Image 1 (cartoon, rainbow, N blue to C red):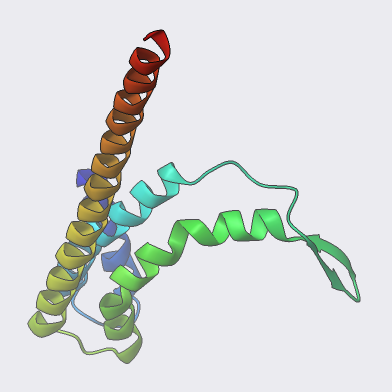
Image 2 (cartoon, rainbow, N blue to C red; image 1 turned 180 degrees about the vertical axis):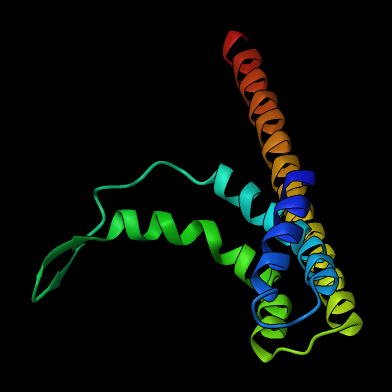
Length: 145
């Protein structure tokens, strides 16, 4: 997450500098967007392999496989939702402390929701495995009787 914060701060400061905005506020806004960017990176790491068995999209220019398109779309959806306040502030221009505060809150909420959902899924999988193991043991015991 530290890399995402540093990268967000640096890139946003460089982005707002030509527009005449204060680079300090731009760096603060980018740093506040760092947890949302890290969440998008975590989601990108967990996506599955490209599925080439999905249906093809027929266009006048030719056929486009839908598997790689869906694979790419899985990466940036969470990051886009999490950085929406920063993108809105940069587009509107003239942002200050309130935009940084809103972005920080949204980033933390997105990161917390993503990690909570991940932990819940892992717990369910773990419980599912232990329940299957218990059923397998019970069937084995009954079978041996």
